[in-house]
Image 1 (cartoon, rainbow, N blue to C red):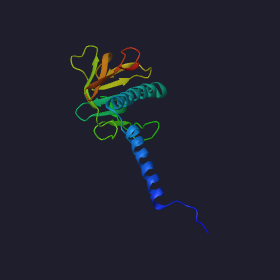
Image 2 (image 1 turned 135 degrees about the vertical axis):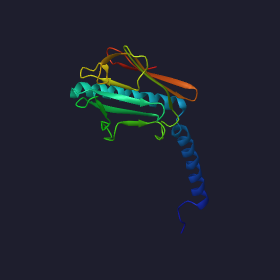
Image 3 (image 1 turned 90 degrees about the vertical axis):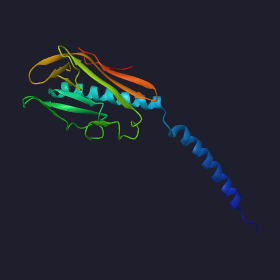
Length: 180
């Protein structure tokens, strides 16, 4: 009686071929180049601005984004106007994962190669830029320090990775967010 099946050598050859193909596929799709990482980081920063603006319009309460080159963090906040001066409340949650809306470039596995190199939010009548940008309930970018309310002159965050850069900017009157 003859037995039907595969020999150990045949099984090992097939496993070896599958392993080589899997390694090639993982190598192709598993690594993300600097340009793609930079695009993802810029999209995440733009999404934070857009979310803060839409939350201001939706809730009728000022929201904004604070960014820091020294900590490599972007955080969404709600402006508590009951305090004097108004306080930034960083307990805002991301709409999808329900975690605090913080982008931490230094500890995020995908964003770690990207660095924020410049954060500059310029306001009318100011001589130095700020590191936070707020939106009023109509979605217009405004700065309120409890003493004066200022209109946005220009706003941008520059991101860099592997010699490439992306610029995320917010338009002064409309609050429109663009990535270049």
